[in-house]
Image 1: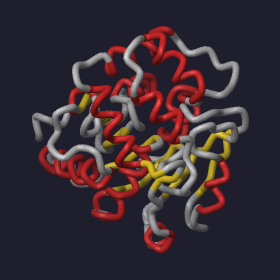
Image 2: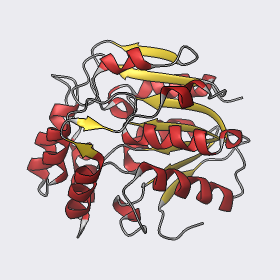
Image 3: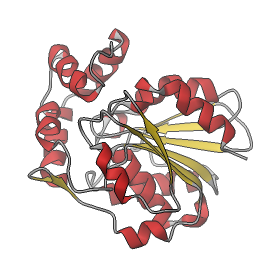
Image 4: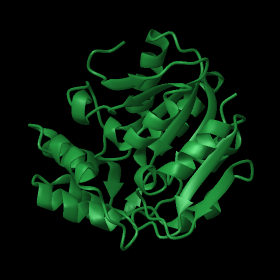
Length: 252
C-alpha cells in the first residue's frame, strides 16, 4: 500500500467494492453508501491523488495517475478483482482502470462520469476550487445539487474541512487549470469504451448542472443507463439509497 494514497476501508466479504469520488471531493462522499454495504462487502473509499489525505501524492492531477495509483494500491492489498464505483471525475478514473486492467475490474458503476462528453460547467468548478470558507463551500455545493435539495450540515462540514487543509485550494485550482480548456474536458475515445466487456451501468441525473445529461447520448450500446429524473450532479448523496440497492444486487 502507498502511504501517500489514503483509503478508508470497512467491512469484509468475498466481494470488494471500490469507491472513487469526484473533483474536490473525498472518501467521505461515500459515507452513507459505504456504511450500508460494509456489512456484506469489503469496501474501500479512496481520497484520490491531490485530495484530502492524498494531498501530497506525487504527480497528482491527471486521471491516468489516479487510475494507476488505485490499481497499484489494490494489488498491494491483495485484491485481484473489484467492483469499481466512480462519481464525476472518479467515473473517469474508474473507466481508465477498466481500460488499463480489464481483468481486474468485475464491473463498473458510473455516476455522471467525467470524460463522456466535451461540455462541462468548468466555470463553476474553477470557482468552487478556490473556496476556502464554509460559506463558500455551501454556496458552491448548492449549484451541484438539484434545485431545492437540502444539503445536510454535516455534508457541508466534510467538504469544508477538506478544502481548509493547507495547500488544498491551491492544488484544486491547479487541477482545474490542467483538466479544463474553456468549458471543455477531455473525452475518452468511444472505441475504447465499446471494447469494455465487464458490466457497465451509468446513473445520470436529468438536472445535472455540471455534466449535462445529454452526455448519455454518447454511451456505447453495451452500457446500461439509469436516468434519474429530478436528480442533480451529487448522486452519491442525492440518490444514495438507489445506489445501495443497485450495488447489493450487482456483485456476485
